[in-house]
View 1 (cartoon, chains in turn brown, orange, cyan, green):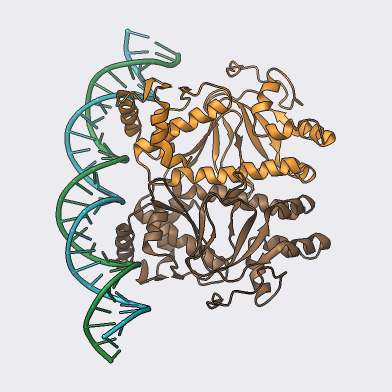
View 2: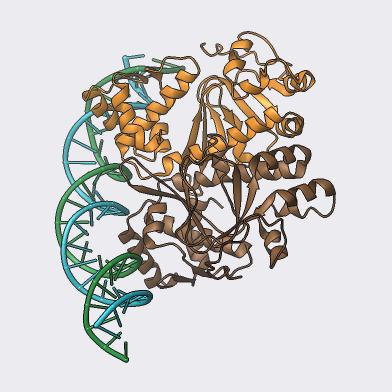
Length: 253
Length: 253
DNA sequence: CGTTCTTTTGATAGCTCTCAAGTCGCGTGG
DNA sequence: CCACGCGACTTGAGAGCTATCAAAAGAACG
């Protein structure tokens, strides 16, 4: 369950057809799970899908997966680690757009402009599945399941990105952030009540459009109110229902 | 170019195959333009596309096109008029999600949940093209152009909805709002400098996550600074470059 | 022509940011 | 092993932007 250990020997070929290690487990929880493991029909198409997946070698923390304006060729599913996407405006200010956990898909917003609209950075050691987009699109034409899944994934992203657009209080934002992480981790089989924050307070603040000081203060208050327990980057959720109640406006559950 | 006059005699059948009035002009600027008018190939598929389009009768201002949790069956392209989408939270507060002008597509965020996640309301008299989603998805499998266009449209929406998520000042938000309207109207062949605000100040404020009073004040200040000229719901943009400069952070152009 | 809703304008308050300083943890090097 | 230095984080005080409250002016409607 832990990310692969840092390996400086990354001289192995980047293209390894498929299968190795906890492959099977990963694929059951990846964004394409419903497609990759459809229960045994469209066998030839499925084989094609397997072929067009490339598993990347581990990407070191602090390294980029792609950058703004890189030509768009592929979407990536996170296999392990956490990815941060962000843009930098013309005055040099960074703006964090999202965090991507294992099983989630990066790059869907690059289709229209045909270039990545943001930078993608590995926060810790990250491994990915790379899907060539032309290949997967053409395959989707022959595989209704895959097409439907792509539509669903993109539709989900449309709804999700308007999530933080509301005018919510710092408390609501932070509660929603924690609940969102908890839910997504729980879906992947991790604990729903113990969250490790891979990202810095500054990244969280930037993502939530708050000051880092505000994030600090709210976390402390949440702790004082016995909602959570914070120790550095480890968060234990003590009162999930109440936290969810705080987040309900933001998450519209 | 003006919306059809209000007609109380809406007893006509809702399904009219296609073609009538300024049909041709509309289709050249609709979201599916590149697909509906592909320059004469895939004739049979094209005919199918034409068949699955239903032109709705005019919808009266204040009437809903769909509501939260309605089962999802179709996406709609606006032909004339303006549509507002919004949700109401559990405390009864309304939250405006977007405004849709002629040529734009509504309902793409409903694919994943299979239900519309918001309400869609006609602000003035609205006419629509209705696309059955199952039909268009299956057609997309046989029509690579159409599939690609759907991917592009959804990708665009993903990027667009994170647009207002930043922590921008009231000035920046309002400037971006005006520029966005101006650009979208200009793309449709309307004037880029004369904008009619179909929506109320309250709707604008809600959409931008501001108070109506703030919208009022900022518009006045913009006028005092010779950026725009406001008369009720008519806005004339006097200094497009400067307004665009104000909006640049939000629109990331 | 009065009623009602929308919009504008003014005064005040509150939330969050900014600035500033201090604390903590961790890796480095003595 | 410990002192040092750096970055991340926390904590405090004050300022600013926008919301809220209140009220009046202006259109739209019957």
